[in-house]
Length: 468
Image 1 (cartoon, rainbow, N blue to C red):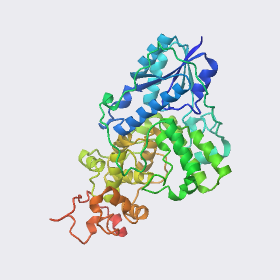
Image 2 (image 1 turned 120 degrees about the vertical axis):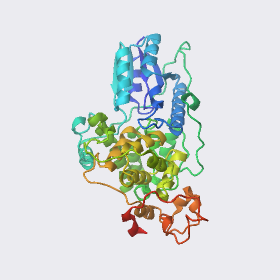
Image 3 (image 1 turned 60 degrees about the vertical axis):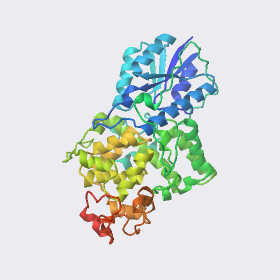
Image 4 (image 1 turned 30 degrees about the horizontal axis):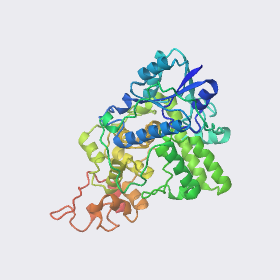
């Protein structure tokens, strides 16, 4: 019998899975496989954990859910931990696999693992492209010619590209012999990580897995119809529904971006078509754009000078960085967002832009320190989107204009009553909304002998003052 291994990576689902569908079409025996790659759990260049506890737990839950879904179809998931190339090589010998079916990697670390698998496997590796909304062969450019400005890319794909139809979800899978060792899904302790309790104030208490992702998609569109309000509410800061939160299940492929697209199209036909329904697709195109930029520029997205090769006078100051990371900057809007990140593994898009701008523009720190910290802490960390956005704000990426955020102006615009800041910094609860975003201007002696337990600001930008 023809035997194939389906190597799951950042595609932890059974819906819209081309590699799985093609393997089933072309082989009698199909062996689903996943490896917890040891390199995922190392350290970043600046010493952060590459995968922190919140995201690691979400990944473990996602793999467990995939295993359950495969079992329900009559198969199972072979799980290994360690070096992927070694583990898949040993499995291939054991089951006498003639081919591997998998999605093609985009980023260097994944590509290096892929190359090692290729070197050790004597059969055929069938690659597919399934992490983006638009297939790489359907965009109106070779990926090497992806425009350096998003608007040009968006207009090009909207005019000339079509989103492919979904691959059908399999109804049954070939049974796996009991003689194949299933392996064990590791826990956090295996990776030297501590279990964390999600803060009660979390915008959305999430769990990994395809089932929960599909449930959230259904809820946000058809149950609550919150999609109709997306553009209006997307800059919110508190609660589960100011944004879709689908990024939680997109990063490791529990949700297919095409699935989201076609559900939005269904919503437009059955419920309503407006600016908000378009805007969710607009954001999916942004996500695609960063992935194609990453493919185009390779490791340049991780370089200090970015893809623009622009040289700035960045500094590495651990003391300044630690105050930012530990939410002790003394600037409430920054600290509130960083507390939310540290205690929940999530932060709003508006918050991400502001804390990144503060680190880059006000502290003058090497932007990669912040990017790596997000890599460690965010549950929905996506390599291309994370580094693309940090480069964008640092002026070394895909933005022809220099950008910065006036933290006080932003805080007063998006948290005008101070509710978000007071939610995460309860020690400022009694402050009037007019001064809660700049407590150092309060008439009462906050930082004197009888002060609240909150630090004085580490920096006060001159251009903030017109918004006091």
